[in-house]
Amino acid sequence: MNMEQKNSNHEAWVVVVDMGYGHQRAAYPLRHLSPTGKVINANNYEGISKKEYRGWQATQRLYETFSRLSNVPFIGGWLFGLMDKFQEVPAFYPRRDLSAPNLQIRQNYYIIKRGSGKDLIKLLNTKNIPLITTFFTAAFMAEEHDFKNDIYLVICDSDISRTWAPLHPKKSRIKYLAPCRRVVERLKLYGVKPDNIFLTGFPLPEENLDGGSGLDTLQRDLAERLINLDPEHRYRHKYAETIKNFLKNIKIEERHHHPLTLAFAVGGAGAQKKIGRQMLWSLRQKLLANEINVNLVAGTRNDVYCYFREAISNYGLEKVFGKNLQIIFALQKEDYFRALNESLRSTDILWTKPSELVFYSALGIPIIMAPSLGSQEVFNRTWLKTIGAGISQNDPRYTSEWLFDWVNSGWLAEAAMSGFLDGRQFGVQNIIDVVFRGVKEPTADDSLL
Image (cartoon, rainbow, N blue to C red; front, side, top):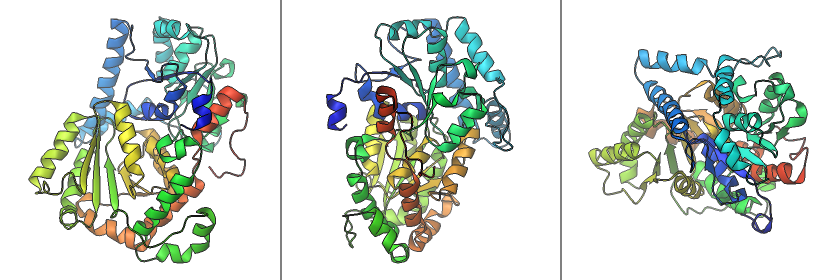
């Protein structure tokens, strides 16, 4: 964190739900605002009742089961589609009133009105500070159970379902922190009062942004990345003035502090691990020849870590494991986020499903998109392709062919610069400005997204 944040007295509860990675990844850069320096898990905090804990656990198991079933031929896709229907994001056009609550939001409020979350809000009310949460249910609980300070809800996707808006949006006092313009406009269609919507950008990690206060580190990392992503100078020759203008004081020279580096990240349910295995088989000769670095991101899932370790052994890659082939894994999510964020400084390409990680394109990292998992990720994919910062994956069995074609063409260098130029890097600072300084318009009007 920067010095201003370290020395400030700004405090807010930071509340998440431990379900997948998205909600906790958005909260991780905000943890320093918490009185304890840590986030609170609404579904697993000290003092949670057994009944409420079991209810949350059942929901998480259901989500992860359906996510993994999406890979099962025929019936798996149908079952996941059935669940996804409850959180479907409707078409944006034609613009129309979408404020009527859906079935999921009615069910959510039914449970809350019967007392769910009351103990949590009673705990939070022991200190009169704002609440910042990355999960809609926690915000609804706070409002229904009379949380005594302001309630802020951080949005984790580029478009959202009706479930993110409260039962009676025009009467609600929940304030929304939106990552992009589409979310701002979507919330208005859902009936949220414009005065309760703030365009802040997604909260990106301090490890990649000079403690959250500047772009010097990011620009140096991007300059190095452009060399690896444009070995034949196609992009750098054509857009030399653009690079010079936006990477000021950064001298781009032919230096290679690391070979081309690819990170492949699975989601919280581990549903994409097969893609990683196929990619690894295709790249095995280039790994053995030290022509590429690969970071397999298993997150906090031990089963995914073991799956990747078995593949490494079976493919004869033990001699390069721990060298130019790594697995990023940690038992705790905060440790995992920290390790991944630090590794992203020397990562040239991020391959993952279009989750909340699409906003990491603002760090100047091009994203290869695995298949979408859920309605919101379909919209994330469209958003990322629209800004030119992501490309849909090709057949992972032939990664060693198409990946290097894309690198040599300069496509991925162009995607890296597009994400950097059009993304919003200062979500954390903008959120602080809104919550603690009363700033109404924290981002520039001329920003594209």
